[in-house]
Length: 322
Image (cartoon, rainbow, N blue to C red; front, side):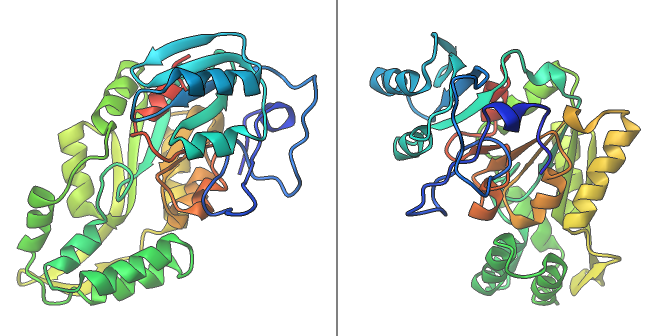
């Protein structure tokens, strides 16, 4: 996972609570294979703390003490910046225990430093896994969802898992796709706020999905996204055939599309942010200057630059508020 210059060497680090590593991870750089080392020469950064609820003063005071922060600034309704903060190994556990998201951000870094945000669709931009909801129309949601979960945890090759899931949809009327879009698709909290902020800064958006073009194209038009790419379901005589057309758009495909669009926009890797929740997003996240694990599986949280475990997508805008 590439880190931004100087971050890993100075302050940003990965801390995992040993008694439950699947539960708590720090929100910073590439995971280390050794305990973090703290020195008085560690470079000060800003500590961003945010939540879905009002943050009690006692929590902010405690975190400011741990981080030896100089001052506290409110940057949103439930978000604060603790300036010139230092790393401390107790911050990760304390924040998770009190349902707080946090991240150490270099002073001065903001959204204006970036030119492209790449997002996964299912369970990231939107709250559902589209294929699971399509399967529900066939009474097959448990079977398909079990395969989806295994793939997101990295236990099954994505291309194989998609073929197995799509095969279960054979014979389903194509109108089921529109029903899922109309009746079940919802945006993740903060999605429209984040997209508005990105537009304000002229940041382009790329939506990539191991799901289906039927949904990505509608979201592109509805939200004003700049680029999208996904898989195409084969349909014959108004019915799903149980096959995907062409090569499966998988984890490598997502990474390749990130690079393709980045190069078209003449951006450097450090100007790209990638957001995802499952193992299928790791390759594309590794190609970005900053990666965001959004309500993600442990394998993704462990490798992301930052993790948003509780707040909505607008938490990215708070992290990079400048």
